[in-house]
Length: 286
Length: 325
Picture 1 (tube, rainbow over the protein chains, first blue to last red):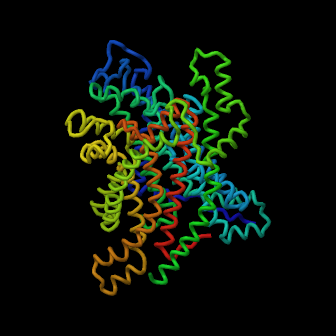
Picture 2: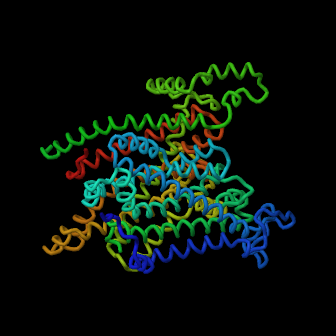
Picture 3: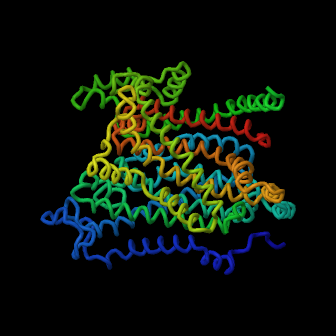
């Protein structure tokens, strides 16, 4: 018997996305930032950790566009290479919390017994402000990039799990799921082939918003002192290192701040566009 | 008091009792998570208290005093039993009980959060409503652009820039610190207005975006068309019919906004050197002051659960269609 799977996004959906103004703008911004981070060695010959103690606190100039920092390191190189780490943390956090959230959400929609337990645990985690939970976990796990990703993922999983559960609860009552069940599909097959693929829209929307939050949260964690450890640059720790010299050397914190804001803005716009087109509950906006 | 209101109040009361029962397991999770977090933290609190030079015997005695040599489950149960009696423990470093440390700092975070909420609610709701009503115009794009910036720029970064501008360059406002309201409303406000606005920016962006989509939803409803068709003035249609129904989803969001506020205040208090709860808990985490971390984190969680409980109850009272369970 034929599967009642949703059809993969056809060209029409992609074309509608491409015409959506905010999606288009967000997409371009994110792609440009990612491309700049990946192409860092071709954009600047400077290394992000190379110190030139005679060239400390140089303002932006023709030779170093974003100026230099306390150790004479080139801020442009630090922002470009820092983008690799910050965008990676954002992506990894969004990916991990999406996968775990999808798993928890679908399981608790399917099995009432697990639902009560899992959702109380999610409620318990959500009772802490996300950033506070992330500070605590990151401090507990020690100064590594991995701790930051783990901390942020724990902080954002409950939200994703709730979103997926809400969609899964609606979808499992639809006729095609009944049809598949009557045809003898196992629970596992129902969840993986029928319910989960139909939760993809809200999940994708949540993915892009989590990406944006994670980039902002990474910089906040660095500011508190529990972010990715120096000397490897991240947008957050460049600002954290430059904040004692804001008056004499404003350029150190200006450029990474703009980079963070652009990245978060881009992911938020992307999420808005996806929500308009993929989330049937909010169709009014399109 | 009319009968309908009475019935609704009774319903709300029943709902509160049901919800209260539901919060017990949530609070237990909150307590266990805080406990687990603390025992993951590297570093021995006994060494922190005694100092690096202390002999192993002294450290062992302190460990025994604090109960740190007991099995984890026993420590957890012991802590929970103390909590039930209202005993949150003593801070290791501050030489005061957790509750009195919190009581000292709560008014600061409280006034920061309240001031920020007072700024957020009208601004966010009005901006969102305007954007929805003038949908597709330059006003809509402008307002939504600003709202988007609000949720995309890191608040500590705006905070630093704002201190630089209004404090260091223009000398209009202090660069940080806190003056109690007892020493005058003006200096108190001067200390708090900057952090409160910085903190509000994110919430305003969030709330304006949410209000806009809720308002758009409402404006498409049949009863709005009916109101217009029967010749009701435009102002009355929007104010009496659309706006009031928009407030329901907006009210649910107040719980989220308060949670964002509490989370945001942790960061903003660092930027503006405000000695509030957020600074207390960050200090405690950094100093491995585990009774203090446990106590403050638990209180943060408790506050969140109670706020949401209150909003759920209010929700039942305001919207007669809502029925849980």
